[in-house]
Length: 127
Image 1 (cartoon, rainbow, N blue to C red):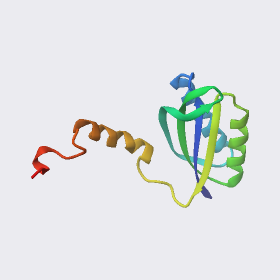
Image 2 (cartoon, rainbow, N blue to C red):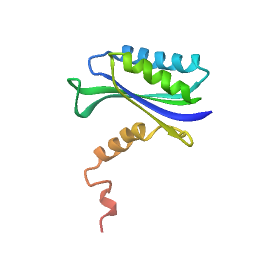
Image 3 (tube, rainbow, N blue to C red):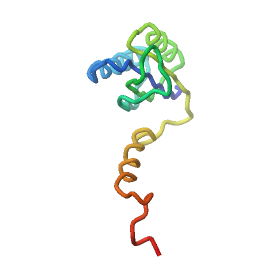
Image 4 (cartoon, rainbow, N blue to C red):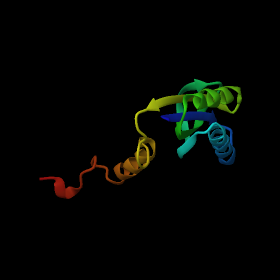
C-alpha cells in the first residue's frame, strides 16, 4: 500500500466541531475503501496568503494515509463536492513522519523565541 499526506482547508466561519466532523468524514471514506488513517492533526485557524472564495483564513487539517491509490481519488472527489472545503492537496510520500509534523513543532519554536528577546541568547553567552 502507498503512503500519502493529505491536507485540506475548511472555511473560516466553521466551528471547530464542524472541522472535526469533516476530518471524521474523510477518515470514514478512507476506512470504507480499505485504507487506514495513521495520524490526524488539526493545525488550527491560520491566515491565507491570498483570499480564496472570499476567505482570508482557513482551518487546516492534515491526514496521514496508508492505502491504495483509488482512495485518494474518492477522497478528493468527495471534497470537491463539499462546500465547506475550499482547498485540498494530497502528496505521496516514501515514509510517514514520526512524531508531530513541522507545523505542530513550529508553535514550540515560536514560544521559545518569544521569551528571550536577544534572538535565543541569554546574558551569560555575551562576552
